[in-house]
Image (cartoon, rainbow, N blue to C red):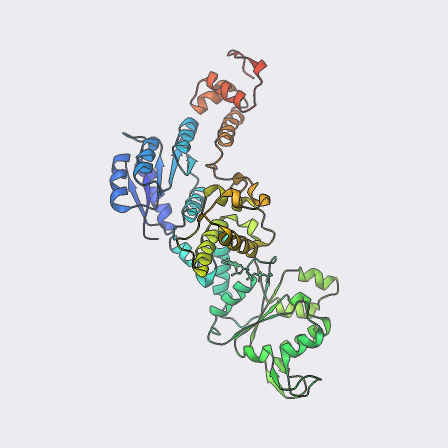
Length: 456
Ligand SMILES: Nc1ncnc2c1ncn2[C@@H]1O[C@H](COP(=O)(O)OP(=O)(O)OP(=O)(O)O)[C@@H](O)[C@H]1O
């Protein structure tokens, strides 16, 4: 990321803190004391995002936002407002602010919001995000960050690894990453899927065979273990390995030797074994479908990849990545883009098929798309009906003003135990205005009248 984040804040200490927090996260950051200074910086420094206080000396945050939208509509703006400035927050969202934050600003929420906003705008992100792109693994979530740290930690060791996770979560990608990050990177990476293959075939595929070892063995063939040499053998769907093969595999791992079928000449097992499964292998052991001793042999280092729905922050960067990738592969230029509400629906969907399902859906949508822009209405109905506010419950959704207003009014009422006068003071509006809002959002019926004297 080359373009900085611009902070606009008149309070000196807060400005310093915000700059320090963002710089610690690896975002190049610049700061202005007021809107006029900010406008100059926008001309010269082209920030990737502006975070501005609403209340500033001179032009307000919303006025600054309007000026930015006139000249640089592509720059996302986040407005921070003091508690009770809901009117201004709503005003700012209407004027095109990406989000609003309520002061005092929560550090974690701020960082997450900035990451999500930049990712949503297809920005290449700061060192953290560049790092998170390593080995072809895309993401901005803590999950991906931890996964990459673990890969770096365990890659150099020869220990076996067992990767677990639902179908399509990226188990093979992680296995390849482990290989690339290891001293074995120059050696072969060989993948073998144990799923739904009869015993004889699994055995001959993994161990190899000599000519005449069985009917049809017209020539000698090296097995996957031999092909992997001192590299990595990736055993996918290891839970489906037939039980008699499990016994043979265990023996090979214990003795660090194996033999081609049809000979007694042992060979050294030099490859590292990385196995993967989408089934609960511990349960398969207790059900008697998987050998406990082999389970422990393989599970020296367990690595779990959570499903996509548990790391929704990764969806936006993955969507941008796949759109770029698919358009490049099929030669689509200019690149197909996606509408914010379509992206929000993707972020809110459950993704039972995880990243593979997301990738396949985008490919289909890009290929079938004529106008170069994916709209919410292009999505399958099942996905389009998802509400964007499921996705990031901590941040306000820019697409649902009534929900935002309703939530703020409710918060104020709850804080004051439904004392309307105090709630109105908190919100910075008159009690009459509050009652109108309560009616609009269904908290007061018409029969409740305009009685200003009785508090409920
Ligand atoms: N974090 C990620 N960043 C980019 N692409 C990813 C990521 N995770 C997965 N993918 C892509 O998603 C697709 C599915 O990943 P992969 O085949 O590794 O999943 P899997 O868990 O091994 O699936 P299965 O259990 O069905 O074999 C691949 O095209 C992979 O490149």
